[in-house]
Image 1: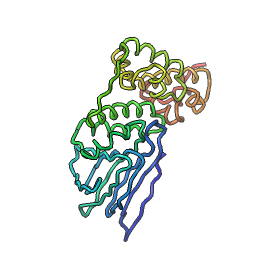
Image 2: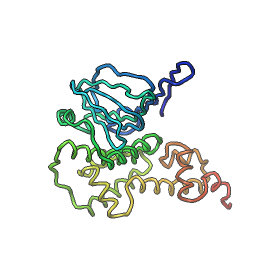
Image 3: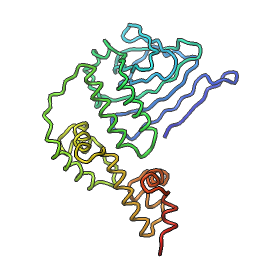
Image 4: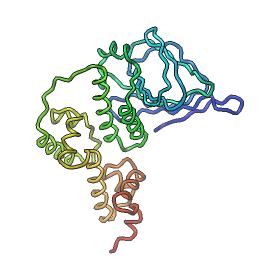
Length: 276
């Protein structure tokens, strides 16, 4: 869960920061920040730094070359192991959202390509990345976040000049096998990486195949199956909080949000109005 810290100077916030580690393979940290006055010293990470600038301008050096960015359609990608800094440009500072990705998402040997082009003007990529941030901010939506990360990864690989040399299995077969896998693990915290490994297919091929066959992405299918399972548990008389965790939801609030969306009433009301 996000944790926040405000540092105040003369009644005005100089910095507002939220950081957390989501349960999504490949994402080591999520970092949201708003800085009024701040300058990062030269430093390195052992992860990829994937940044959205939501407000203001940033000036930074990467491998001794300076860059600046204030275009809202642009995405900044800084590679692991390469020195960089960063500083505010305008008096009101800047606001950013960052994902720190490990090298299982993007291989370290693409660092040179990232140094050559650290700023990407790509409105589609920005939209995908913003949706990924929304997903990682909601506990229990890890499968959705992992799905969105897979498509962000593919888009970044293409922009960095990486061409995969894989032969994908037929979509209908992959979709059928994935549904069997999800049905067998519907109440467990399965990951897209685990499914891809079990079915010998790339995560994005799994998602595209499943959507083409069944009309919805895998994470939406799982949520629907869990809502049905929780509904049955409530009919059996299980309390809402116990039904939530037994059906695979993060907590009661997570179940309530999706139960209401699917059935039009929250689970507590549904259970209270059941006929004996």
